[in-house]
Image 1 (cartoon, helix red, strand yellow):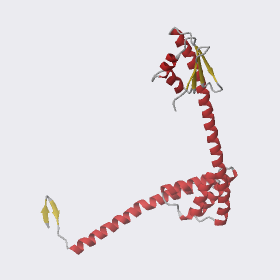
Image 2 (image 1 turned 90 degrees about the horizontal axis):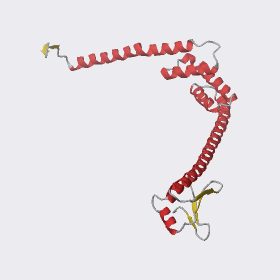
Image 3 (image 1 turned 120 degrees about the vertical axis):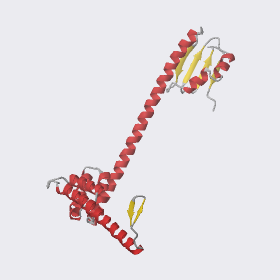
Length: 238
């Protein structure tokens, strides 16, 4: 017996110490199993035992799945859960819900459900999954087309509004330049002014000029005309 830093200690032989440690670890393991395992098991049993006898297959399957998430499914309920998964899958196949049916069938297989029945239902469920996928793809494509149509319509409205603003800006600057928008998608900007010449087109093509602004809004060409002999077409640089 000795005192070390105020703590009583006693020397033990190597074998005795190892034996004591072994007993200690075993005792901890037993306490863990007794203290934790059965309580989880009892909780799982209670959840399943509390299910009403007339619960629907989907309700039973849901409870079985919940029990598996929080612990281990009690063996005495495996058969009922397997049948519930099968019945739920059949109901979902009838209602056209292939994705959920596939998940329930997987759960039924894990619990040892009849492979013949499972195989037939899996074929039906996979067909529904393919149908669901095709419908989802069609819906996505329809939504994309609708968005594209809306974007196209919005861009046309924006270009027409720009033309009106541009006309007013020219007038404010003292230039009576006629502004028009043509084309089915309003992609041609037509400018008419008696004094148009290369000075105007050169100025428009400079960085920050009118041409870059118009092309940024989706115009594909700008036509300048003096109404007589001067006709120039400006297009975006590719």
